[in-house]
Length: 118
Image (tube, rainbow, N blue to C red):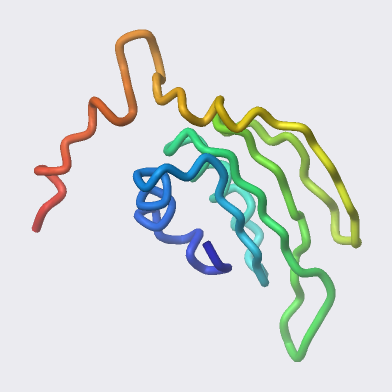
């Protein structure tokens, strides 16, 4: 996903349905709630996400930084501040294949796509 794609839940859902275990999210984010939205995208799709966000200023825009790594359960594994950083984390991508929310609730099996049609 690229930048503003984070705002549309169907972007992440489509990637998950196509088998994505990790969503790479290069960005130029300026709004303070943007990083939290990607936490939600990971949680609601049970996928990892890595946001690499810009820092600094250009014209009237100030980029918020806060690049981050989120696991498939929506846990924030790392969130940067507003400076350049290189962070490496080991993750087990196979965790993203488990779509059970509880023992009886499965993200894929419990979907009702027929209810989403217009």
